[in-house]
Length: 251
Length: 182
Length: 170
Image 1 (cartoon, rainbow over the protein chains, first blue to last red):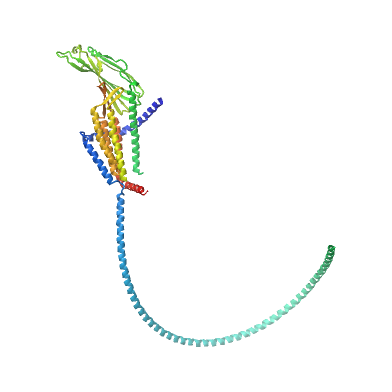
Image 2: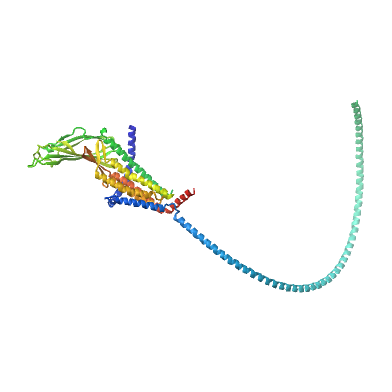
Protein backbone atom coordinates (compact mmCIF):
# COMPACT_ATOMS: atom_id res chain seq x y z
CA UNK A 1 0.00 0.00 0.00
CA UNK A 2 2.86 2.31 0.92
CA UNK A 3 4.67 1.29 -2.25
CA UNK A 4 1.53 2.05 -4.21
CA UNK A 5 1.31 5.46 -2.61
CA UNK A 6 5.00 6.10 -3.34
CA UNK A 7 4.51 4.99 -6.91
CA UNK A 8 1.57 7.30 -7.36
CA UNK A 9 3.50 10.15 -5.79
CA UNK A 10 6.48 9.50 -8.08
CA UNK A 11 4.18 9.44 -11.10
CA UNK A 12 2.55 12.64 -9.96
CA UNK A 13 5.95 14.30 -9.57
CA UNK A 14 7.10 13.23 -13.03
CA UNK A 15 3.93 14.34 -14.71
CA UNK A 16 4.00 17.55 -12.69
CA UNK A 17 7.55 18.26 -13.83
CA UNK A 18 6.61 17.72 -17.49
CA UNK A 19 3.62 20.02 -17.19
CA UNK A 20 5.52 22.68 -15.28
CA UNK A 21 8.14 22.72 -18.03
CA UNK A 22 5.65 22.79 -20.90
CA UNK A 23 3.11 25.13 -19.28
CA UNK A 24 4.85 28.41 -20.22
CA UNK A 25 5.08 27.24 -23.85
CA UNK A 26 1.51 26.05 -24.22
CA UNK A 27 -0.37 28.55 -22.04
CA UNK A 28 0.10 31.62 -24.30
CA UNK A 29 -1.17 29.57 -27.25
CA UNK A 30 -4.18 28.72 -25.13
CA UNK A 31 -4.93 32.33 -24.21
CA UNK A 32 -4.82 33.30 -27.88
CA UNK A 33 -7.21 30.46 -28.66
CA UNK A 34 -9.57 31.60 -25.90
CA UNK A 35 -9.49 35.13 -27.32
CA UNK A 36 -10.56 34.15 -30.83
CA UNK A 37 -13.16 31.71 -29.56
CA UNK A 38 -14.70 34.41 -27.39
CA UNK A 39 -14.86 36.56 -30.51
CA UNK A 40 -16.39 33.83 -32.71
CA UNK A 41 -18.87 32.21 -30.32
CA UNK A 42 -21.40 35.08 -30.23
CA UNK A 43 -22.01 34.52 -33.95
CA UNK A 44 -23.47 31.10 -33.27
CA UNK A 45 -27.23 31.17 -32.66
CA UNK A 46 -28.29 30.14 -29.18
CA UNK A 47 -32.06 30.18 -29.50
CA UNK A 48 -32.70 26.85 -31.21
CA UNK A 49 -31.03 23.76 -32.56
CA UNK A 50 -32.79 23.84 -35.95
CA UNK A 51 -30.00 25.83 -37.63
CA UNK A 52 -27.45 23.30 -36.50
CA UNK A 53 -29.59 20.35 -37.58
CA UNK A 54 -30.03 21.84 -41.06
CA UNK A 55 -26.30 22.57 -41.32
CA UNK A 56 -25.43 19.03 -40.25
CA UNK A 57 -27.78 17.53 -42.85
CA UNK A 58 -26.34 19.76 -45.59
CA UNK A 59 -22.77 18.73 -44.71
CA UNK A 60 -23.66 15.03 -44.64
CA UNK A 61 -25.50 15.17 -47.98
CA UNK A 62 -22.70 17.20 -49.53
CA UNK A 63 -20.17 14.68 -48.24
CA UNK A 64 -22.16 11.79 -49.67
CA UNK A 65 -22.44 13.41 -53.10
CA UNK A 66 -18.88 14.72 -53.37
CA UNK A 67 -17.19 11.56 -52.10
CA UNK A 68 -19.22 9.29 -54.35
CA UNK A 69 -18.50 11.37 -57.45
CA UNK A 70 -14.80 11.88 -56.67
CA UNK A 71 -13.89 8.77 -54.71
CA UNK A 72 -10.17 9.18 -55.33
CA UNK A 73 -9.68 5.82 -57.10
CA UNK A 74 -9.53 7.32 -60.60
CA UNK A 75 -6.11 7.92 -62.06
CA UNK A 76 -4.66 11.37 -61.37
CA UNK A 77 -5.18 14.11 -63.90
CA UNK A 78 -1.64 14.03 -65.13
CA UNK A 79 -1.99 10.33 -66.08
CA UNK A 80 -5.25 11.13 -67.88
CA UNK A 81 -3.47 13.93 -69.71
CA UNK A 82 -0.66 11.55 -70.55
CA UNK A 83 -3.13 9.01 -71.93
CA UNK A 84 -4.80 11.70 -74.03
CA UNK A 85 -1.44 12.77 -75.36
CA UNK A 86 -0.60 9.16 -76.15
CA UNK A 87 -3.93 8.75 -77.91
CA UNK A 88 -3.39 11.91 -79.94
CA UNK A 89 0.09 10.77 -80.84
CA UNK A 90 -1.26 7.38 -81.94
CA UNK A 91 -3.92 9.04 -84.11
CA UNK A 92 -1.29 11.27 -85.65
CA UNK A 93 0.85 8.21 -86.28
CA UNK A 94 -2.03 6.48 -88.08
CA UNK A 95 -2.66 9.54 -90.23
CA UNK A 96 1.03 9.76 -91.00
CA UNK A 97 1.11 6.07 -91.96
CA UNK A 98 -1.87 6.51 -94.32
CA UNK A 99 -0.18 9.50 -95.93
CA UNK A 100 3.03 7.54 -96.22
CA UNK A 101 1.24 4.67 -97.97
CA UNK A 102 -0.35 7.05 -100.46
CA UNK A 103 3.00 8.66 -101.12
CA UNK A 104 4.59 5.23 -101.54
CA UNK A 105 1.98 4.31 -104.18
CA UNK A 106 2.64 7.52 -106.08
CA UNK A 107 6.34 6.88 -105.91
CA UNK A 108 5.88 3.31 -107.22
CA UNK A 109 3.88 4.54 -110.22
CA UNK A 110 6.55 7.09 -110.97
CA UNK A 111 9.19 4.43 -110.70
CA UNK A 112 7.35 2.20 -113.19
CA UNK A 113 7.13 5.07 -115.66
CA UNK A 114 10.79 5.70 -115.18
CA UNK A 115 11.53 2.01 -115.81
CA UNK A 116 9.72 2.03 -119.16
CA UNK A 117 11.48 5.22 -120.16
CA UNK A 118 14.80 3.75 -119.22
CA UNK A 119 14.10 0.58 -121.25
CA UNK A 120 13.28 2.60 -124.35
CA UNK A 121 16.36 4.69 -123.96
CA UNK A 122 18.44 1.60 -123.34
CA UNK A 123 17.23 0.06 -126.61
CA UNK A 124 18.11 3.21 -128.54
CA UNK A 125 21.50 3.33 -126.93
CA UNK A 126 22.09 -0.35 -127.79
CA UNK A 127 21.46 0.28 -131.49
CA UNK A 128 23.71 3.29 -131.48
CA UNK A 129 26.42 1.43 -129.70
CA UNK A 130 26.21 -1.44 -132.17
CA UNK A 131 26.71 0.88 -135.15
CA UNK A 132 29.59 2.59 -133.49
CA UNK A 133 31.19 -0.71 -132.58
CA UNK A 134 30.95 -1.89 -136.16
CA UNK A 135 32.50 1.33 -137.41
CA UNK A 136 35.28 0.98 -134.86
CA UNK A 137 35.85 -2.64 -135.83
CA UNK A 138 36.18 -1.69 -139.49
CA UNK A 139 38.69 0.96 -138.59
CA UNK A 140 40.53 -1.45 -136.41
CA UNK A 141 40.74 -3.97 -139.21
CA UNK A 142 42.19 -1.46 -141.58
CA UNK A 143 44.68 -0.45 -139.01
CA UNK A 144 45.53 -4.08 -138.34
CA UNK A 145 46.25 -4.66 -141.99
CA UNK A 146 48.40 -1.62 -142.15
CA UNK A 147 50.19 -2.68 -139.04
CA UNK A 148 50.76 -6.19 -140.42
CA UNK A 149 52.39 -4.93 -143.59
CA UNK A 150 54.54 -2.57 -141.63
CA UNK A 151 55.57 -5.28 -139.29
CA UNK A 152 56.42 -7.62 -142.14
CA UNK A 153 58.66 -5.07 -143.74
CA UNK A 154 60.40 -4.40 -140.53
CA UNK A 155 60.83 -8.04 -139.82
CA UNK A 156 62.49 -8.55 -143.19
CA UNK A 157 64.81 -5.67 -142.51
CA UNK A 158 65.68 -7.08 -139.14
CA UNK A 159 66.30 -10.51 -140.61
CA UNK A 160 68.76 -9.21 -143.14
CA UNK A 161 70.52 -7.30 -140.45
CA UNK A 162 70.57 -10.35 -138.28
CA UNK A 163 72.07 -12.44 -141.09
CA UNK A 164 74.81 -9.95 -141.54
CA UNK A 165 75.44 -9.88 -137.85
CA UNK A 166 75.44 -13.65 -137.76
CA UNK A 167 78.04 -13.91 -140.50
CA UNK A 168 80.20 -11.44 -138.69
CA UNK A 169 79.82 -13.32 -135.50
CA UNK A 170 80.72 -16.64 -137.18
CA UNK A 171 83.93 -15.35 -138.56
CA UNK A 172 84.86 -13.87 -135.26
CA UNK A 173 84.05 -17.02 -133.49
CA UNK A 174 86.11 -19.16 -135.89
CA UNK A 175 89.06 -16.91 -135.42
CA UNK A 176 88.79 -17.06 -131.69
CA UNK A 177 88.20 -20.78 -131.63
CA UNK A 178 91.41 -21.33 -133.62
CA UNK A 179 93.39 -19.24 -131.21
CA UNK A 180 91.93 -21.07 -128.31
CA UNK A 181 92.74 -24.46 -129.84
CA UNK A 182 96.37 -23.50 -130.27
CA UNK A 183 96.55 -22.36 -126.68
CA UNK A 184 94.87 -25.54 -125.53
CA UNK A 185 97.33 -27.72 -127.33
CA UNK A 186 100.27 -26.00 -125.79
CA UNK A 187 98.76 -26.37 -122.40
CA UNK A 188 98.03 -30.05 -123.04
CA UNK A 189 101.63 -30.71 -123.75
CA UNK A 190 102.71 -28.94 -120.60
CA UNK A 191 100.27 -30.88 -118.57
CA UNK A 192 101.35 -34.22 -120.06
CA UNK A 193 104.95 -33.72 -119.16
CA UNK A 194 104.07 -32.67 -115.63
CA UNK A 195 101.87 -35.64 -115.19
CA UNK A 196 104.53 -38.04 -116.38
CA UNK A 197 107.04 -36.69 -113.94
CA UNK A 198 104.58 -36.95 -111.12
CA UNK A 199 103.73 -40.51 -112.09
CA UNK A 200 107.32 -41.53 -111.93
CA UNK A 201 107.78 -40.02 -108.52
CA UNK A 202 104.70 -41.66 -107.26
CA UNK A 203 105.71 -45.00 -108.69
CA UNK A 204 109.02 -44.81 -106.95
CA UNK A 205 107.39 -43.98 -103.68
CA UNK A 206 104.87 -46.67 -104.11
CA UNK A 207 107.50 -49.30 -104.73
CA UNK A 208 109.21 -48.34 -101.52
CA UNK A 209 105.99 -48.49 -99.65
CA UNK A 210 105.18 -51.83 -101.18
CA UNK A 211 108.42 -53.24 -100.01
CA UNK A 212 107.87 -51.94 -96.55
CA UNK A 213 104.43 -53.25 -96.53
CA UNK A 214 105.53 -56.63 -97.69
CA UNK A 215 108.08 -56.99 -95.00
CA UNK A 216 105.57 -55.88 -92.37
CA UNK A 217 103.03 -58.20 -93.77
CA UNK A 218 105.46 -61.07 -93.64
CA UNK A 219 106.36 -60.44 -90.07
CA UNK A 220 102.75 -60.24 -89.10
CA UNK A 221 101.90 -63.29 -91.03
CA UNK A 222 104.63 -65.18 -89.26
CA UNK A 223 103.43 -64.00 -85.92
CA UNK A 224 99.93 -64.96 -86.72
CA UNK A 225 101.07 -68.32 -87.98
CA UNK A 226 102.88 -69.01 -84.74
CA UNK A 227 99.87 -68.01 -82.81
CA UNK A 228 97.73 -70.17 -84.93
CA UNK A 229 100.01 -73.10 -84.40
CA UNK A 230 99.89 -72.58 -80.66
CA UNK A 231 96.16 -72.30 -80.73
CA UNK A 232 95.94 -75.36 -82.89
CA UNK A 233 97.97 -77.24 -80.34
CA UNK A 234 95.75 -75.98 -77.60
CA UNK A 235 92.71 -76.88 -79.55
CA UNK A 236 94.03 -80.37 -80.13
CA UNK A 237 94.72 -80.88 -76.45
CA UNK A 238 91.28 -79.60 -75.58
CA UNK A 239 89.67 -81.77 -78.11
CA UNK A 240 91.49 -84.78 -76.72
CA UNK A 241 90.32 -83.78 -73.25
CA UNK A 242 86.79 -83.43 -74.53
CA UNK A 243 86.96 -86.84 -76.12
CA UNK A 244 88.23 -88.32 -72.88
CA UNK A 245 85.49 -86.52 -71.00
CA UNK A 246 82.92 -87.79 -73.44
CA UNK A 247 84.20 -91.26 -72.99
CA UNK A 248 84.18 -90.86 -69.24
CA UNK A 249 80.68 -89.50 -69.30
CA UNK A 250 79.55 -92.32 -71.53
CA UNK A 251 80.99 -94.75 -69.08
CA UNK B 1 7.93 8.45 -45.75
CA UNK B 2 8.09 11.98 -47.11
CA UNK B 3 10.26 14.31 -45.06
CA UNK B 4 7.31 16.60 -44.57
CA UNK B 5 5.61 13.86 -42.56
CA UNK B 6 8.49 13.64 -40.05
CA UNK B 7 7.73 17.11 -38.63
CA UNK B 8 4.15 15.98 -38.29
CA UNK B 9 5.16 12.96 -36.24
CA UNK B 10 7.38 15.05 -33.95
CA UNK B 11 4.50 17.40 -33.15
CA UNK B 12 2.15 14.45 -32.69
CA UNK B 13 4.50 12.81 -30.19
CA UNK B 14 4.85 16.11 -28.30
CA UNK B 15 1.08 16.46 -28.22
CA UNK B 16 0.66 12.89 -27.05
CA UNK B 17 3.11 13.37 -24.16
CA UNK B 18 1.49 16.65 -23.18
CA UNK B 19 -2.06 15.36 -23.37
CA UNK B 20 -1.18 12.27 -21.41
CA UNK B 21 0.51 14.40 -18.75
CA UNK B 22 -2.53 16.66 -18.59
CA UNK B 23 -4.87 13.73 -18.30
CA UNK B 24 -2.65 12.14 -15.65
CA UNK B 25 -2.59 15.35 -13.63
CA UNK B 26 -6.36 15.71 -13.88
CA UNK B 27 -6.84 12.08 -12.90
CA UNK B 28 -4.37 12.17 -10.02
CA UNK B 29 -5.74 15.51 -8.89
CA UNK B 30 -9.28 14.20 -8.98
CA UNK B 31 -8.27 11.02 -7.20
CA UNK B 32 -6.49 12.86 -4.43
CA UNK B 33 -9.29 15.44 -4.16
CA UNK B 34 -11.72 12.60 -3.49
CA UNK B 35 -9.30 11.30 -0.87
CA UNK B 36 -9.15 14.67 0.78
CA UNK B 37 -12.92 15.18 0.68
CA UNK B 38 -13.68 11.73 2.04
CA UNK B 39 -15.31 12.35 5.41
CA UNK B 40 -13.84 9.17 6.84
CA UNK B 41 -10.32 10.39 6.24
CA UNK B 42 -10.75 13.40 8.56
CA UNK B 43 -8.48 15.41 6.30
CA UNK B 44 -10.47 18.60 6.68
CA UNK B 45 -11.60 19.47 10.16
CA UNK B 46 -13.20 22.90 10.34
CA UNK B 47 -13.65 23.48 13.25
CA UNK B 48 -11.28 21.20 15.03
CA UNK B 49 -12.67 21.74 18.50
CA UNK B 50 -15.23 24.12 19.94
CA UNK B 51 -15.14 27.60 18.40
CA UNK B 52 -15.03 30.45 20.83
CA UNK B 53 -16.93 33.61 20.06
CA UNK B 54 -17.55 36.82 21.95
CA UNK B 55 -20.26 38.98 20.41
CA UNK B 56 -20.67 41.45 23.25
CA UNK B 57 -22.27 44.48 21.60
CA UNK B 58 -21.49 46.68 24.56
CA UNK B 59 -17.79 46.31 23.94
CA UNK B 60 -17.35 45.85 20.18
CA UNK B 61 -13.60 46.32 20.30
CA UNK B 62 -13.35 43.22 22.45
CA UNK B 63 -15.55 41.15 20.20
CA UNK B 64 -13.73 38.06 19.08
CA UNK B 65 -14.08 34.84 17.26
CA UNK B 66 -11.75 31.95 17.45
CA UNK B 67 -12.13 28.82 15.28
CA UNK B 68 -9.47 26.14 15.46
CA UNK B 69 -9.08 23.94 12.43
CA UNK B 70 -6.73 21.50 10.79
CA UNK B 71 -6.32 20.45 7.24
CA UNK B 72 -4.26 17.48 6.13
CA UNK B 73 -3.28 17.39 2.49
CA UNK B 74 -3.43 13.66 1.80
CA UNK B 75 -3.40 14.24 -1.95
CA UNK B 76 -0.43 13.96 -4.32
CA UNK B 77 -0.23 17.66 -5.17
CA UNK B 78 0.23 20.74 -3.05
CA UNK B 79 -2.69 22.90 -2.00
CA UNK B 80 -1.46 26.33 -2.96
CA UNK B 81 -2.65 29.81 -2.06
CA UNK B 82 -5.14 28.53 0.51
CA UNK B 83 -7.57 31.07 1.85
CA UNK B 84 -10.21 30.97 4.55
CA UNK B 85 -12.84 33.63 4.57
CA UNK B 86 -15.47 34.20 7.19
CA UNK B 87 -18.38 36.60 7.28
CA UNK B 88 -20.86 36.90 10.12
CA UNK B 89 -24.22 38.49 9.64
CA UNK B 90 -26.37 39.46 12.59
CA UNK B 91 -30.13 39.58 12.47
CA UNK B 92 -31.55 41.80 15.13
CA UNK B 93 -34.71 43.74 15.91
CA UNK B 94 -34.28 47.44 15.96
CA UNK B 95 -35.28 49.41 18.94
CA UNK B 96 -36.59 52.25 16.89
CA UNK B 97 -40.31 52.79 17.39
CA UNK B 98 -42.89 52.31 16.32
CA UNK B 99 -42.20 49.10 14.34
CA UNK B 100 -39.64 46.58 15.58
CA UNK B 101 -38.21 45.84 12.25
CA UNK B 102 -35.73 43.11 11.73
CA UNK B 103 -32.41 44.10 10.30
CA UNK B 104 -29.47 42.22 8.90
CA UNK B 105 -26.01 43.59 9.29
CA UNK B 106 -22.62 42.18 8.50
CA UNK B 107 -20.51 42.46 11.59
CA UNK B 108 -17.50 40.40 10.64
CA UNK B 109 -15.58 39.94 7.45
CA UNK B 110 -12.09 38.54 7.31
CA UNK B 111 -9.99 36.57 4.85
CA UNK B 112 -6.78 34.89 5.86
CA UNK B 113 -4.30 33.45 3.42
CA UNK B 114 -2.55 30.40 4.82
CA UNK B 115 -0.16 29.92 1.90
CA UNK B 116 0.62 26.43 0.74
CA UNK B 117 0.02 23.06 2.25
CA UNK B 118 2.47 20.63 0.73
CA UNK B 119 1.31 17.14 -0.05
CA UNK B 120 1.30 14.92 3.01
CA UNK B 121 1.52 17.91 5.37
CA UNK B 122 -0.84 19.03 8.08
CA UNK B 123 -1.92 22.61 8.68
CA UNK B 124 -3.14 23.16 12.17
CA UNK B 125 -4.15 26.72 12.83
CA UNK B 126 -6.81 29.04 14.11
CA UNK B 127 -9.09 31.38 12.34
CA UNK B 128 -9.43 34.34 14.62
CA UNK B 129 -10.59 37.91 14.62
CA UNK B 130 -10.52 40.35 17.44
CA UNK B 131 -12.05 43.78 17.50
CA UNK B 132 -11.18 45.87 14.50
CA UNK B 133 -9.24 42.96 13.01
CA UNK B 134 -12.21 41.41 11.25
CA UNK B 135 -15.16 43.00 12.96
CA UNK B 136 -16.79 45.88 11.12
CA UNK B 137 -17.09 48.15 14.15
CA UNK B 138 -18.88 50.88 12.26
CA UNK B 139 -21.75 48.60 11.31
CA UNK B 140 -22.15 46.94 14.71
CA UNK B 141 -25.24 48.41 16.39
CA UNK B 142 -24.97 49.71 19.89
CA UNK B 143 -26.96 47.97 22.61
CA UNK B 144 -29.33 50.91 22.60
CA UNK B 145 -30.32 50.28 19.01
CA UNK B 146 -31.06 46.61 19.59
CA UNK B 147 -34.28 45.23 20.92
CA UNK B 148 -33.04 42.42 23.13
CA UNK B 149 -36.57 41.08 23.62
CA UNK B 150 -36.05 39.40 20.26
CA UNK B 151 -33.12 37.05 20.12
CA UNK B 152 -30.13 38.00 18.01
CA UNK B 153 -29.50 35.49 15.28
CA UNK B 154 -26.12 35.09 13.74
CA UNK B 155 -25.46 33.66 10.33
CA UNK B 156 -22.13 32.85 8.89
CA UNK B 157 -20.79 32.60 5.40
CA UNK B 158 -17.72 30.50 5.20
CA UNK B 159 -15.45 30.22 2.19
CA UNK B 160 -12.55 27.87 1.73
CA UNK B 161 -10.56 28.28 -1.47
CA UNK B 162 -7.34 26.85 -2.75
CA UNK B 163 -5.55 25.94 -5.93
CA UNK B 164 -4.75 22.34 -6.69
CA UNK B 165 -3.08 20.11 -9.30
CA UNK B 166 -0.21 22.45 -10.13
CA UNK B 167 -2.51 25.51 -10.10
CA UNK B 168 -4.52 24.01 -12.95
CA UNK B 169 -7.73 24.65 -11.15
CA UNK B 170 -8.90 26.71 -8.24
CA UNK B 171 -11.84 25.62 -6.21
CA UNK B 172 -13.95 27.53 -3.78
CA UNK B 173 -16.31 25.98 -1.30
CA UNK B 174 -18.79 28.48 0.02
CA UNK B 175 -21.22 27.69 2.79
CA UNK B 176 -23.83 30.40 3.08
CA UNK B 177 -26.25 31.32 5.78
CA UNK B 178 -24.84 28.86 8.27
CA UNK B 179 -26.79 29.43 11.44
CA UNK B 180 -24.66 30.10 14.49
CA UNK B 181 -27.68 30.24 16.71
CA UNK B 182 -29.00 32.99 18.87
CA UNK C 1 -15.08 -0.24 -54.11
CA UNK C 2 -13.05 2.74 -52.83
CA UNK C 3 -16.15 4.92 -52.51
CA UNK C 4 -18.12 2.27 -50.59
CA UNK C 5 -15.22 1.65 -48.20
CA UNK C 6 -14.84 5.37 -47.54
CA UNK C 7 -18.61 5.74 -47.04
CA UNK C 8 -18.67 3.01 -44.43
CA UNK C 9 -15.68 4.57 -42.69
CA UNK C 10 -17.46 7.93 -42.68
CA UNK C 11 -20.60 6.41 -41.20
CA UNK C 12 -18.70 4.54 -38.50
CA UNK C 13 -16.75 7.61 -37.44
CA UNK C 14 -19.88 9.73 -37.50
CA UNK C 15 -21.49 7.28 -35.08
CA UNK C 16 -18.37 7.34 -32.88
CA UNK C 17 -18.39 11.12 -32.76
CA UNK C 18 -22.12 11.24 -32.04
CA UNK C 19 -21.48 8.88 -29.12
CA UNK C 20 -18.47 10.72 -27.76
CA UNK C 21 -19.63 14.30 -28.31
CA UNK C 22 -23.35 13.97 -27.67
CA UNK C 23 -24.49 10.73 -26.05
CA UNK C 24 -21.80 10.22 -23.39
CA UNK C 25 -21.66 13.88 -22.27
CA UNK C 26 -25.46 13.99 -22.17
CA UNK C 27 -25.61 10.88 -19.99
CA UNK C 28 -22.72 12.09 -17.82
CA UNK C 29 -24.24 15.49 -17.18
CA UNK C 30 -27.64 13.99 -16.54
CA UNK C 31 -26.06 11.63 -14.02
CA UNK C 32 -23.95 14.27 -12.26
CA UNK C 33 -26.78 16.75 -12.25
CA UNK C 34 -27.32 15.61 -8.71
CA UNK C 35 -24.47 13.83 -6.91
CA UNK C 36 -23.39 13.25 -3.35
CA UNK C 37 -19.89 14.12 -2.17
CA UNK C 38 -18.88 13.62 1.46
CA UNK C 39 -22.49 12.98 2.32
CA UNK C 40 -23.55 16.31 0.81
CA UNK C 41 -25.74 16.76 -2.23
CA UNK C 42 -24.06 18.74 -4.92
CA UNK C 43 -26.42 19.86 -7.68
CA UNK C 44 -25.69 21.38 -11.06
CA UNK C 45 -27.70 24.55 -11.55
CA UNK C 46 -30.62 24.04 -13.97
CA UNK C 47 -29.65 26.98 -16.16
CA UNK C 48 -26.15 25.68 -16.39
CA UNK C 49 -27.39 22.20 -17.24
CA UNK C 50 -29.65 23.51 -20.02
CA UNK C 51 -26.84 25.60 -21.49
CA UNK C 52 -24.45 22.66 -21.43
CA UNK C 53 -26.96 20.34 -23.12
CA UNK C 54 -27.64 22.96 -25.82
CA UNK C 55 -23.99 23.36 -26.72
CA UNK C 56 -23.40 19.59 -26.62
CA UNK C 57 -26.20 19.10 -29.14
CA UNK C 58 -25.33 22.05 -31.38
CA UNK C 59 -21.63 21.47 -31.75
CA UNK C 60 -22.00 17.72 -31.49
CA UNK C 61 -24.17 17.75 -34.62
CA UNK C 62 -21.72 19.92 -36.52
CA UNK C 63 -18.71 17.88 -35.42
CA UNK C 64 -20.37 14.56 -36.30
CA UNK C 65 -21.39 15.78 -39.75
CA UNK C 66 -17.89 17.09 -40.39
CA UNK C 67 -16.50 13.75 -39.20
CA UNK C 68 -18.63 11.99 -41.81
CA UNK C 69 -17.32 14.25 -44.58
CA UNK C 70 -13.76 13.97 -43.28
CA UNK C 71 -13.59 10.20 -42.95
CA UNK C 72 -15.49 9.45 -46.17
CA UNK C 73 -13.00 11.53 -48.16
CA UNK C 74 -10.04 9.85 -49.88
CA UNK C 75 -6.84 9.64 -47.87
CA UNK C 76 -4.59 12.70 -47.98
CA UNK C 77 -7.01 14.58 -50.18
CA UNK C 78 -7.42 18.33 -49.88
CA UNK C 79 -11.08 18.12 -48.88
CA UNK C 80 -10.18 15.67 -46.12
CA UNK C 81 -7.58 18.08 -44.80
CA UNK C 82 -10.05 20.96 -45.00
CA UNK C 83 -12.78 19.21 -43.07
CA UNK C 84 -10.34 17.80 -40.53
CA UNK C 85 -9.25 21.37 -39.84
CA UNK C 86 -12.86 22.56 -39.59
CA UNK C 87 -13.60 19.66 -37.25
CA UNK C 88 -10.75 20.62 -34.96
CA UNK C 89 -11.92 24.24 -34.84
CA UNK C 90 -15.45 23.12 -34.07
CA UNK C 91 -14.05 20.82 -31.39
CA UNK C 92 -12.34 23.77 -29.75
CA UNK C 93 -15.55 25.75 -29.80
CA UNK C 94 -17.43 22.73 -28.47
CA UNK C 95 -15.15 22.34 -25.49
CA UNK C 96 -14.99 26.05 -24.82
CA UNK C 97 -18.71 26.59 -25.09
CA UNK C 98 -20.03 23.88 -22.84
CA UNK C 99 -17.21 22.72 -20.61
CA UNK C 100 -15.78 26.07 -19.80
CA UNK C 101 -18.67 28.30 -20.88
CA UNK C 102 -16.50 31.31 -21.44
CA UNK C 103 -16.34 32.11 -17.78
CA UNK C 104 -14.03 29.18 -17.06
CA UNK C 105 -16.02 28.51 -13.92
CA UNK C 106 -18.31 25.64 -13.12
CA UNK C 107 -20.69 26.01 -10.24
CA UNK C 108 -22.29 23.33 -8.17
CA UNK C 109 -24.87 23.93 -5.49
CA UNK C 110 -24.62 22.24 -2.10
CA UNK C 111 -28.03 21.04 -0.97
CA UNK C 112 -28.74 19.70 2.53
CA UNK C 113 -32.31 18.67 3.27
CA UNK C 114 -33.68 20.41 0.22
CA UNK C 115 -32.03 23.66 1.19
CA UNK C 116 -29.28 25.41 -0.71
CA UNK C 117 -26.52 25.56 1.82
CA UNK C 118 -23.79 26.85 -0.45
CA UNK C 119 -21.96 26.20 -3.65
CA UNK C 120 -18.68 24.94 -4.97
CA UNK C 121 -17.04 26.85 -7.76
CA UNK C 122 -14.24 25.34 -9.72
CA UNK C 123 -12.24 27.79 -11.77
CA UNK C 124 -10.41 25.90 -14.47
CA UNK C 125 -8.92 28.81 -16.41
CA UNK C 126 -5.36 27.49 -16.27
CA UNK C 127 -6.52 24.02 -17.28
CA UNK C 128 -8.48 25.55 -20.14
CA UNK C 129 -5.41 27.47 -21.31
CA UNK C 130 -3.42 24.25 -21.48
CA UNK C 131 -6.15 22.31 -23.28
CA UNK C 132 -6.57 25.15 -25.73
CA UNK C 133 -2.82 25.18 -26.22
CA UNK C 134 -3.03 21.50 -27.11
CA UNK C 135 -5.82 22.28 -29.56
CA UNK C 136 -3.79 25.11 -31.02
CA UNK C 137 -0.97 22.69 -31.75
CA UNK C 138 -3.47 20.22 -33.21
CA UNK C 139 -4.81 22.98 -35.47
CA UNK C 140 -1.25 23.84 -36.51
CA UNK C 141 -0.73 20.17 -37.34
CA UNK C 142 -3.92 20.01 -39.39
CA UNK C 143 -3.00 23.25 -41.14
CA UNK C 144 0.43 21.84 -41.91
CA UNK C 145 -1.23 18.66 -43.24
CA UNK C 146 -3.49 20.77 -45.43
CA UNK C 147 -0.56 22.69 -46.90
CA UNK C 148 1.33 19.41 -47.36
CA UNK C 149 -1.62 17.88 -49.22
CA UNK C 150 -1.91 20.93 -51.48
CA UNK C 151 1.79 21.19 -52.24
CA UNK C 152 2.36 17.45 -52.76
CA UNK C 153 -0.99 16.81 -54.43
CA UNK C 154 0.37 15.17 -57.56
CA UNK C 155 2.81 12.97 -55.64
CA UNK C 156 0.04 11.81 -53.29
CA UNK C 157 -2.29 11.05 -56.20
CA UNK C 158 0.50 9.18 -57.93
CA UNK C 159 1.10 7.00 -54.85
CA UNK C 160 -2.61 6.46 -54.31
CA UNK C 161 -3.12 5.49 -57.97
CA UNK C 162 -0.17 3.09 -57.88
CA UNK C 163 -1.54 1.46 -54.71
CA UNK C 164 -5.02 1.18 -56.18
CA UNK C 165 -3.57 -0.28 -59.38
CA UNK C 166 -1.48 -2.75 -57.37
CA UNK C 167 -4.51 -3.85 -55.35
CA UNK C 168 -6.55 -4.20 -58.54
CA UNK C 169 -3.87 -6.30 -60.22
CA UNK C 170 -3.38 -8.52 -57.18
